[in-house]
Image 1 (cartoon, rainbow, N blue to C red):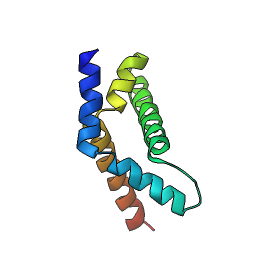
Image 2 (cartoon, rainbow, N blue to C red):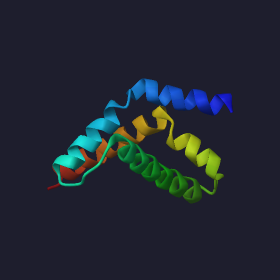
Image 3 (cartoon, rainbow, N blue to C red):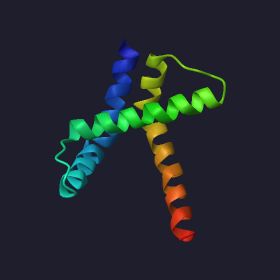
Image 4 (cartoon, helix red, strand yellow):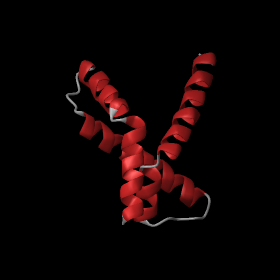
Length: 95
């Protein structure tokens, strides 16, 4: 239990909630009324979908607790951000 709490603390410490607040602010400007908690929940749920698909595609299904732990990991979130940024850069080059 302590390990999970430390991971949650680490995630919050590294982002200070600023990233989720920024996402919520942008969504609100786009017409979707959102607070940082909702933004965080959406990000975590999307990360869980990525993890589940990656695990299944590689023949290594994970338990829900493992998926959640990975989804909340700042390292995983940063890795996904880098990958998605690369996809977006390639998309822009091809249009």
